[in-house]
Image 1 (cartoon, helix red, strand yellow):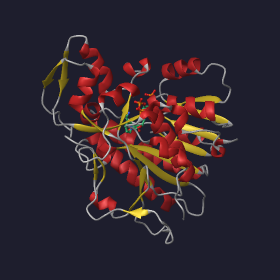
Image 2 (cartoon, rainbow, N blue to C red):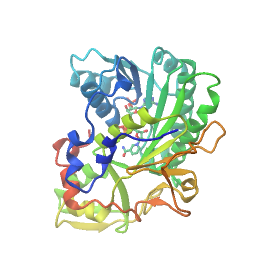
Image 3 (tube, protein in one colour):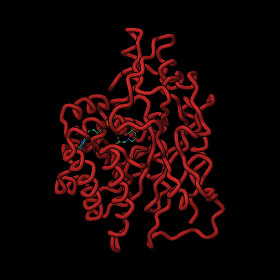
Image 4 (cartoon, rainbow, N blue to C red):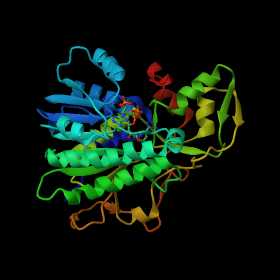
Length: 360
Ligand SMILES: NC(=O)c1ccc[n+]([C@@H]2O[C@H](COP(=O)([O-])OP(=O)(O)OC[C@H]3O[C@@H](n4cnc5c(N)ncnc54)[C@H](OP(=O)(O)O)[C@@H]3O)[C@@H](O)[C@H]2O)c1
């Protein structure tokens, strides 16, 4: 099997002039979507809206179904995309398998983005996190198999790696369910894979809008001045997902190579000269995040701009003739030992767009 991502992902690199140039990242209609019906769980969230914008603008799906609970967010999204007859809105909860199954009738591709993702909220309401992030993932898998959906891609997070909070733990379980979901398909064509990435600039609940707010008072709070994080933009997340959808065979965890940034540099970039007050690491927070463990590295292939964690299951047929690199023993991909670093200028280029400065 040849796992080659298209050249477009070569432009995925940040830290140079191309990073904010959308046109450089991806060009042309992706035939994968042509005439297809696509469903996005959590379609009214930060990812879902950007995914809808890009897929509807650049590709030619027959229809794009938005699946989420809140009618108000759906109403706002309907207004935002006014007049696009390809969009369909389904009110539903991923905890409700019957509803999911109905919504997936006739669907070819599913992107599973719905989640409870705020660390403190998941800690405080643990069963709710389990029901949405774990039971919801299981329901998506069942409904997709029953409806013979072709491809299902779930979005995961670096917090699922060596999790120290319940959010990460539930996403780890969801990852496992998706990888192993391929063994449940019987003779059906449904395939499941995962994309795992780091913090998204400009997503709901990001620290960036908070820093912009605090800047007004000239005082930024950082929990620990040693902290580092992986960063990517919503657009990069969406383009990566589109490319992985195209490439996936089922069972892979795709991890993009993305830059790190020190939290203190982030604060300084947003509020130059402001006082930085260290308030102490919060419960469930790590100093550094990890996107790939040493254990996973043993069954991971490296490409120019991304990694693929291959499943360790009998259903996975390795490509013996492949020329892609395996990783050296002990390799780990962590935000503090990254080769790629985001400078203040890079970050400002990314958040130059006013819509990234507020919680949407
Ligand atoms: N943002 C990041 O920095 C980041 C980083 C790595 C990975 N991720 C992952 O990326 C995915 C998308 O994140 P995001 O930033 O777009 O999140 P978001 O903006 O909070 O959106 C979440 C979406 O899920 C829906 N939702 C929540 N609970 C649901 C349920 N039980 N049933 C159906 N829909 C439900 C929400 O709408 P309703 O509330 O109206 O249902 C909303 O549409 C998540 O899986 C997250 O774990 C995010």
